[in-house]
Amino acid sequence: MIIARPNRTIARVATALLFLIAVGTSAQPARAHEGDKDGTDWVATWAESPDSAGPTFNGQTIREVVRISIGGGRLRVRLSNEMGTAPLTVGAAHIAVAGPGGTIQPGTDRVLTFGGHGSFTLAPSAPALSDPVDMDVSDLTSLAISLYFPVSTGAATTHGTASQTTFISGPGDFTASAALPVATTSVSRFFLGAIYVVPDSPTAAVVTLGDSITDGLFSTVDAERRWPDRLAERLAALHRFKRTSVVNAGISGNRVLNDFVGPNAQSRTDRDVLGQPGVRFVTLLEGINDIGFPTLLGLPAQAVSADDIIEGYRQLIARVHSHGLKIYGGTLTPFEGTIYPGYFTTDGETKRETINHYIRTSGAFDAVIDFDKAVRDPAHPTRLLPAFDSGDHLHPNDAGYRAMADAIDLHLFDEPELER
Image 1 (cartoon, rainbow, N blue to C red):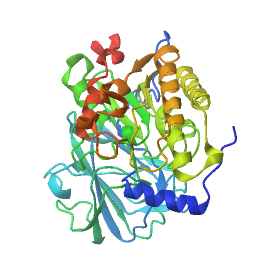
Image 2 (tube, helix red, strand yellow; image 1 turned 30 degrees about the vertical axis):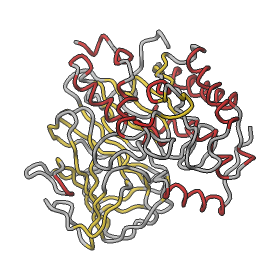
Image 3 (cartoon, rainbow, N blue to C red; image 1 turned 45 degrees about the vertical axis):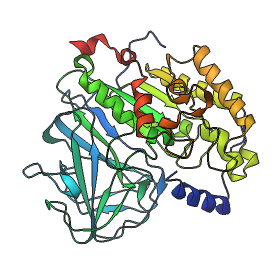
Image 4 (tube, helix red, strand yellow; image 1 turned 90 degrees about the vertical axis):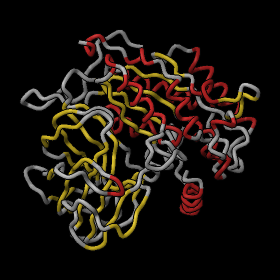
């Protein structure tokens, strides 16, 4: 099918809308990025997918807080200028254990270097991986990454709906300061792509590929209430799964077939899924925006059928399987009654039900995670259960996200070699 991009007028309307809504294989699984030359095996313990070009920073420090899933004794940080069109100069970068309100815990601050340099430049459209830093961190630790930009950054590589506070200073390098002098804040993420860790035992990563429902839109800010956060907590609580990390690759507004917010799921899979160190498992929950956005935004040329979306799934499944990984299909959650005009239609509901039938019965996925069943209203299955509804009748609230994670069978992530 021909993939059309929204024109500028539609893009402006869509951007405004998004801000208003805060919108099996039997083969031995392969390990992505087997390790450094010294035999070190890295695994992704946190990530967030770049989706847009955002504001400009100039002479300022930003401090971003992330909660990793599994800990270890060495860390690396991936920065991203992948949405930038000009070189990005970073004057200083630090990592520390986060304290409250944008502070860091005393004695935990470490300087990040890139190729041995504390100040460095990222090429346009490129990421950069830090040198390893020795730092003992436990599972589910919140870390603060501080970045100083001595000159204008140009449009920042951004993850728009982070549901996490980014602390932004006035002029000056405050990367080593225990308390950042905060001039303003944002709930978007800037320039930060991933954190890798060297764990103390064999480890697998789960990458959750999805849209706003995986991104955690409308979850409580700074509370780690997205469903992948809850999954990480469940895995960390069980001894045999303690070495299983969870990496969130959700982008609010993302689609399987067309670009809208961020590159479409098929085009970003290499970067956001297959490129993650240690990935063994993938979950897929995406497609509802492919159904709803064409009628919401008046884009008839981008209308797709259930079969079109299913074919997109087949391509993703084939690519994941070609890397020796397992991929689990998540059923699309209910959306009748959503407050966004035109997003729900009876034809769209038919598509959702057709897609869910395929996910449940085709056997194409290595297993099924029935998110639809976990959050739907038994008395009205085309709607979210009111107790799980954020209020827009499309996105779950904190309780709904928890119910989604609690519906996942943790035995899907069994790996005998990780139990040693």
